[in-house]
Every structure is written in structure tokens, then in C-alpha cells.
Image (cartoon, rainbow, N blue to C red; front, top):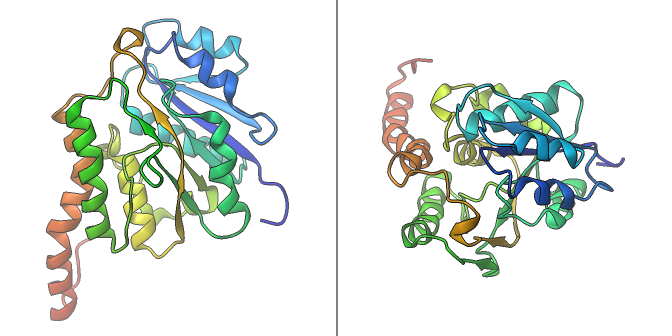
Length: 253
């Protein structure tokens, strides 16, 4: 991009009144034009705290899932003419000061999606991260690498930047309600890669604070299944699609 891109930060949140203020406060306003907090049905004071720190807040009205919250943010970014959308967690696990690291490859024309990786340089601070999540966040990128056809070190970290030009590509299929929970983010990474767009990983930090500051909202079984489902679908349907192309039959839409 020759001119300075217009950047919106999208922060999905659910019952994080103790953390959301610090997240919004630390976002570098010299590179981020608007901070949009998407409230996924919080029952605490998350909205009031975010607004007091200068964020714009949109309330979904009920808990639909982090994917639904991010989708609304992406739709807002496209509608309002932004160039880049950055997504970061509302539970203070990411480092907002590192947003420029995500923007740099896009500014240089090297990527349309920049995936933050806590494992690229071993910068994750596990803290109170449950053991099953440590294992799952290591295994998921291996599976992603197989189905996407290129190596990833981190595919579950939601800290990433995407261009709105990419988001306008309807082939991504982000509208499906099946992606309302945790599936939208790995689905976007997979589809962007498979469609041949340039994707870059950059090293970022991630920290897991003590449990007394709030528990993860992800359920061990249903949450991780929503993350795995896009990749499982790709593994199941890819051989079938290849067979269809060879036979000359028309694939169903």
C-alpha cells in the first residue's frame, strides 16, 4: 500500500470487565483509526468499561459466538471503507503494542493476511493455560499445514490482520452460521491459503493470566470441535472433489 492504510481494531468480548479496559487502552492509536468492541452478550460491565476507554461498542444482543462477533467486525470494516482489520482478544492475552508487526507485511505488499504466531519464536507465556490447550494449539497447526498445503506454526491464535480486499472475496464463505463459534478464524486462514493469497506469519507474544482474573470461555469439547471442523471437512471432501473433477461431473454448490 502506497498510502497509510486505514486500520480498524476489532475486539470481541464476553464478560471481561476486568480486562477489556486494559486492552482498549493499549491499542496504538497512531496506527489504528477506530477501535470496535463487539459485545457477544456480556452480562457484566464490559460495554461501559470499553466505552470509557474510548472504544466504539456494538452489542450483538445475545451470545452468538466469537466467530459471529468477528464477522460483524469484518462487515463493518468493509462497509466503512477501512483497508485493514486487526482482530485481538478482549481477555488481555494479546499484546496490542504489537499491532504494527502485523501491519508491516501488508504495508509492504507481502501479504493480505498476517497470522500472529506465539510459536514462531517461542514467545508464548503459558501461565495458567490448561494442558489440553497446550497440546491442541500445537497439533492444530500441523493439521492445518497438511490440508492447506503450506507450513504453519500457529493456526488458532486469533491475533491477526487482514485486508478488506480479501474480505470482499465471497469465495471465503464466511457467512455460514457454522462458523459462529470458533471455526471462523481457522476457516479464514485455510480458505485464504487455498485460494492462493499471500499469507505471512509473524512472531507475537501471548500470555495466559492467572485464573482468578477470569476463566476461558471455550469449552474443551464443543469449542475445539468448532475449531477442528473446517479442517476435518477439508480432509473429508478433498478426495471426493478430486474424484469429481477427474470424472467430469459437476460439483454441487
